[in-house]
Image (tube, rainbow, N blue to C red):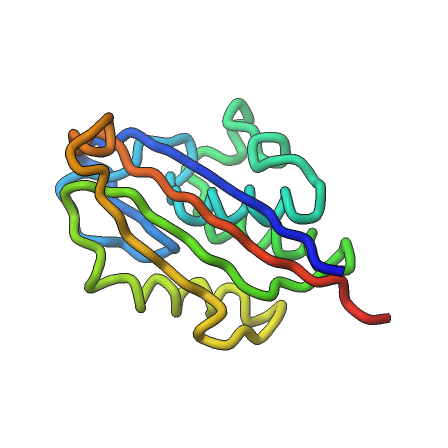
Length: 164
């Protein structure tokens, strides 16, 4: 049996913070404002994984009202989501992600981001390189992303029930 999950995240961009995408720091004069490290791509991936196995969303598992998560690396959240997917008897088959960012061109970083996500997933499942797809889009100067005030990510995952 296969199940799909959809995740989305959005953060304001502010000076003095690193821009983290998929666990990679991308050179930028601004970064995500957030309670944790603010990695919108990993947050959207976590939500997609939780959705695929019917286990809520990231805010339920790691509320920003809890001081334990202040400044926490999003790789930790992803590893926890991957553990839960495995505990539910599923394995990640593939993921397709889109990052929406106006002013920093992501083409030079997409492969590195995909490889880093693959590295994080590897202790759970060995995904082929083409099982992780990263796309980058601008918003054509529309809305907060288009004005350079925010970054967004959307992720779709497919999981498969493991044979027993």
